[in-house]
Image: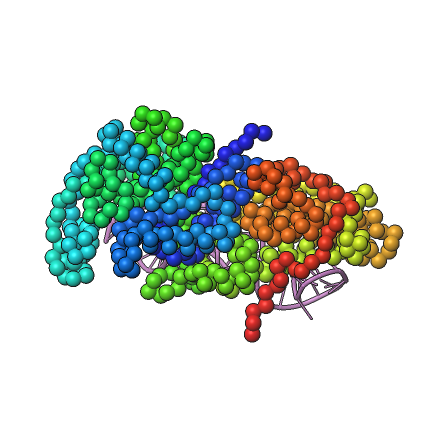
Length: 529
RNA sequence: GCCGACAUAGCUCAACUGGUUAGAGCGAGGGAUUCAUAAGCCCUAGGUUGGUGGUUCGAGUCCACCUGUCGGCACCA
């Protein structure tokens, strides 16, 4: 089977922020997808990072008596350390202040200037001198053409700016979207973009007065490339090397939140189409697609600074220490706002999902199997030689679970993937109920049949653990350790790649292998009273 | 304000182009069990499908209006 390449990204996060559930969510979804594709055997590149060149970054630095770079270094480190601590498997970490990024962006913009798709123009708008920023016409009207901060009149100001010819590409982008060459999902977002694209105008891509923080427009050092253009290019700059270019050519999947869809679904593909026309950039192609999830709300309320109810690092750590990192991943992945509606991060809901899916279903089922194996077969996987009527369709269940799981994950349906694995585990519980091995075991003559039953249970659990690995890798690796399975080692030995399809074939569990008992994988959570 | 989507059992969601008694998971209630983390398994949900009016032999499924939620127009994962 030829190696497929898979390239997935998160947005690069605004470096002035402190990491919170939103950053963690997008990164977790990307991590699950990256792990899934590696498990499948794909050659994966997973990229996340921080966006550093905003004017407010240099403002924040100045307030603290730091250089923008020092301030950015500090904050970038917080993101980097957080993701490392949460065991994200990103292959690199973008920092837009790094030379490798800046040099490429400069080259791209130079090429676009040369081709004429970026041109010098004039921007005119209402300018707030005190804030040193433009306000939109509608805002200006709303404010009565006075600064909302100091009440001084806004001034009409004209300024030289560089523009990108978005207008000349809107048709090509729309065509690519309609043809499925560049997918915008969830589907409901597609129409939003197509409608807006029809009226898209050229967009300014530079500004002045940034005090040297940012990437200068080539040939015009007074102008700085707008931070969001700078940021969008990260997906390309970090793989624009001879070794990494194949990842780009495989087509990137840009995971984002809904608020930045316009940039990613309209401006970004248009920029790439423009760049592709430049000499030396013929290899540039459109992303495979962009996927825009919605937001988390907190305990039923929108998260906002004024309410101070962000699910922040302290709260995230509370969940990890109380329930485990995998439990948090499971909740985010299966209950998250992947669709067009927001999802609620609520403690009661977290506990419910944790107890139902992880403690009562997965953890308990594993305990039943390991306990019976130890009690009746001294902890050794028995042979499935004896016939058991109810076992006939059993291998099918695992096959179906794999098929459903694969279909879900390919469609970025993490809840569906979780449900497929849960279904397989529930079928084990059902099977134990139907065959009642614990009753049969009371008569030694039945032990061969008990052996077959327990073999099937353990075998199905083995497959379920493979399906669950992308979401709850650490607990699944614990299952593998207890069952003497070496998938983790095999993956490590092959550059992180697994063989999901082969490993999920029924009947690979070796009779005689040890199944160790141990502490509950997910202890049931009892709320303190 | 303008444009667009959606509004189904306590919660989260299903029901292809309109057609038999509107389904599932969670939660809740009941039952038979005991290998297991008082977990698992089985049974039970009678919700005027947001409201009003209309089209049709027949409408969650089409139309109009109303109410509400969300999204886009207006830089926040």
